[in-house]
Length: 482
Image (cartoon, rainbow, N blue to C red; front, side):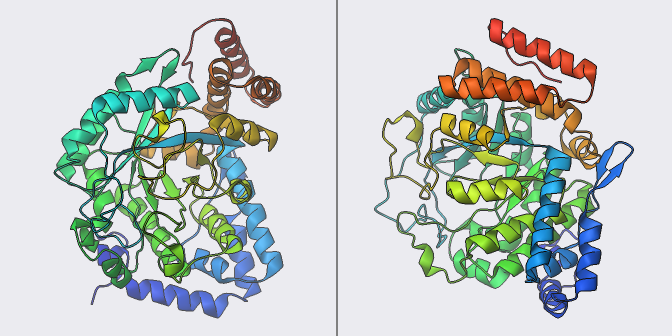
């Protein structure tokens, strides 16, 4: 019988079923224990320190009590604290990215994904390097600076050499004032050697969704293919860090299994990374099962409603205050608007989830991985963010200045990351306004920049940022960063 040990390198010990079940029982016993709930909320609340705000975070057991709690006023307090934490660590900045699908060839049998091997009527496609270049130019013409590349698992069609070639191509494209400055990678679990190759290729974050931490369900949902190996998949982040990758991104696909089980497992994985590597997850994503070719989300009976989804997001923010939280265009505008207040710090915009979709005038559906609920253009998303008092950020400075892994976390956990991130966000927003924005977005953007410059506490930093923004407006100079 496996014993729970967050420092273990064995999947069934750091994601331990008995511990999760005991956690859920503890949460049920205490979900109306107001005294305990108040203690947990007080622990989660950001405290003002000498060098900014400090948050303790919560254990998986403490956070599970909050998630189980159904007392309306306590839920509202969770939401309020989640917003306070988000502002303390990330301010009102929202980082923007886009997914780039390279290939939908896949040899796995995942029951929730239309790319599964048995789906014979989906159009299979793999981008050539020329097609990758064309997609990148289309994304640059929209204004994107940060991509997350996606590919199915297929050693023949999508070997690591293909992924590396694509990364090299992406970084090589300099079109007008466009550059992709950070490539995050979402590909199947692989070897330490291959992770080392990805690191050497200059990737940002390595992202891998667990899908479900419930081992029995995991094996049933992945009946065939290499992804069927639960342990190999779950231990991937340790291999990635052994391969030198500083920043890793976790996530589950909510709706496949009981959400409270997944929530506890997700936090235990974060605790494990912190315990073993001294660095928790750089990002946590919160996708839900959505309709796609050959996939009916109603076939999964663990779906969650919007209110529960919001509560999960807030509780993750309370538990893991330093992590970046990502929500994709799987969700519609209304849901995204609410979750931005509760902890989300990164969103995709203008996304297409089909292979080769960005070069098509009309949105193609024949190779989509899932239906896109938010189909607005990037410019519409940028304008919407600003109207809701969020600063759209295309910043990639920390990654390129070497502020990754424990260096990023040390800054973030002390609240000091705000001293460079806010001016960097404003300078990259100015780049977007000059090179890509519609007249209305440009007008609104510079009004926001003027307001936000005054919020930079250090006078010297504020004046340098102001001077750089003037340079961006009056010349073709780009890529200033603190």
